[in-house]
Image (cartoon, each protein chain N blue to C red):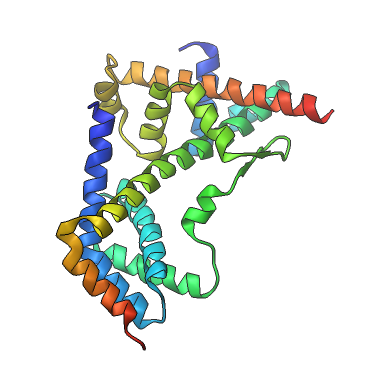
Amino acid sequence: MRTSLNEIKEIEDFLLHKKDHSGLETKMLLDNTLYEKMEIQKYLYSVIRQQGRHAVVENIKKAEQVFFKAPRYQPVIRSIYQLFSKKS
Amino acid sequence: MDSNQTKTSEKTDAFIELYEQYFPIVAGYIRKNGGSLEDAKDVFQDALILFYEQKLIDPSVRNGYLFGTCRNLWSKKLRGEARIIAELDRDLPDPKEDAIISVETISNFMENAGKRCKDLLVSFYYEKVSLEKIASRFGFNGIRSATVQKFKCIEKLRSLAKEKQLEYADFTE
């Protein structure tokens, strides 16, 4: 792998796998852009996870729509509506 | 239909099945504890997200986890804590400038990096798919090639994020 990709791997090992980071710390002392790169990479992982979650939420919403609208589930949906229409 | 679309529809089907099996029970519980149908829907949606993510970490987790999660989420809701979905829509702060980066910008980042990169990164970092499976799903020669591609995608996104930061710095100066 080329140097820039190895650097990404090294940062990932530190951020996600909590591997020994003494080498990375030394490099950060010598290269002040490295800390910034690490912060951006950390941020990207949260962006990726958020994107993944968004896709799951879309699937869940679609499933909810099908469950409440599809004819085959209507008997159970009617009983759920009845349950909530009763006064406590 | 491509394999990602098939996976999406399989996922939706699995969620429908969980709605069929567990939503009536959860609705009954929420009703008994003073909640509305909308409350039951909200709690169930959030619980499904947590259940799905728990399954990614531990595939042996049982469906009973779902009902337990619903109970916990309902208690949290009664204590006034925010919904999981609401947290999702909250914008992420830019770590460097403390600027707020909108969800829209985040989505643009990912789209600009290309659909293939987006799918690969989400598969690995969110869905926890192994590199071996990623290599076969995306047509790479092997684990090594999939690993290199993954880091190239991160590199691409990192430079897009850097550009965004520079634009923001220019704007605020």
